Image 1 (cartoon, helix red, strand yellow):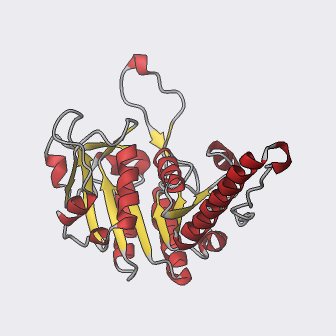
Image 2: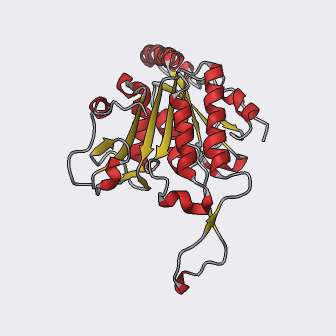
Image 3: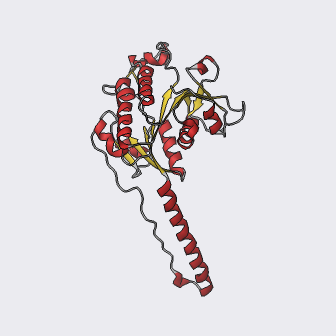
Length: 299
């Protein structure tokens, strides 16, 4: 796809207040209220002007949707999303700040990156199950990647295109979400569809680390569709956590770590493995500065 569409991000609020319906006392109160509202609106504009513009690629995915929503809820950021299809755009609300582009086409993503302060990469190749699998007959399902959408094309070339576009546009920070397991060439994920997905993810991570752009690489454990903010998060390096029982994490927690990485200097130029203790074990993580400070590895 070579087309990117964008329309203005904001529209001016309008007022339907009519002072003629009220008494002079009410008019005085209303005038004060209007001034207050006017001040709040001006303040909001100033806050937005000072906010960082952040684009989330893969915003239509299950984790990407959460990051995009979190960005929109916070005054520190002006959110943008990037998805591959119009269908994905509609799925996350069809907002004007969502771009449609193909990360495998370097030119198509350039307009979406322009004017951006930070980039959160959440794109990934997704395998499909081969038809005909019958779970009642035992065995394991087989998977494949669609033509043009294998890990080399999506997780390596697609992510490289994003990093290159960000560097050319002067983006100040990139947060890249990958996966634990990349130190093991024989990891089961690499055998899915013969895609070597962790190999290509790792190559993109190294490319980012060598780019000169401030970065945070988050290698998440097994992703779970659970509520976030209720578990103690654990960071590690070099897949050490895979040797323990702490190997999974809620997508919502990954999303929050992405947000915090954009806010904290302690997160920059670091690569970390991320998982969480079971709910009810330990204390839910609130101090992300300390969490990032536990890691010093750059790759």
